[in-house]
Image (cartoon, rainbow, N blue to C red; front, side):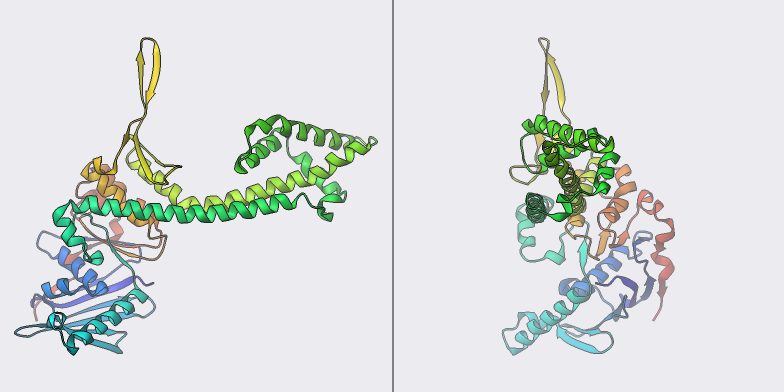
Length: 428
């Protein structure tokens, strides 16, 4: 996947040329009303998605998008009396042409049109991924049947429902990976039951390693292991007895006391116990790495909406939202009320924030170009201050292109600001 290095638009509306270089991480596009910020973003999205309705709605001679790895996309537009014609050129070599009128014809021309579009879309998907982050706008990237649904229902709620479903699927996939790791862990744990010269031959090094741990640390580690294995906490006394037996044998060895036959068995357990703890640490780290994106996601939500609690249901896997517990005292008795709220009950700003962060999480740290037209709409001023940083936290590989009027957003990325008027020239 490639990020954009430069966008060049020639004879936009027949009167101006834009040539804008972009940073690989964050780009803040500013300018006065009417300077063309939204049009600039629309053209980038339309070219990278081959969005014909948007391409037809904007008049230009050509658009050139230079990407990383020497990739380039050039689109040439020519207007005739009854049609708008386009030529897509990839890397200055491969050309594909089509007309806006071809889509409505039931002829061989229409078949050619569909095949050409399919090829262009595939070429685009192979080199770039694009997401439109503004949630209050109809998203041409996910065209399908969204438009009809947006007439019948609130588009934001539709998008939120779909993202919550996608989030559930994503988490179930991660849980599947975690379960596979748990099975591997169990196999390694049970393999400790078998004879192994590594554990069953005396080695002073293991005695020294055991001494480096205090018994409380070993006990805590074993409690954690048994909890991970789903074994009841009633084993606490057995674990304590296990540690006491090992410690007694180690004490005898250190003090050069004679060992009895009964001391031999705890001695072999020393090595196995240390290995068991290491196995647990290894798989805990692996599982944490798998779930790390979701952990960060919940942390971001919590930082923005600190009056609410975000968790995932153990039964359904869905994202649960609760108000912070309300403690009440009645007739001397204290009770705590946990009030769960639905996603559609959130405020407009909270919905937008939830959509932005969920959509970012679901990109799975893949290189994406995120386009956002005034993402500050409906967002609290404090949220505007933090939103781009949160997006970068969830997906460090994202390239963000934002048009904004918000000083809170722009102020965080002063070296990444481009005034569109400074890269625009008027004339033929």
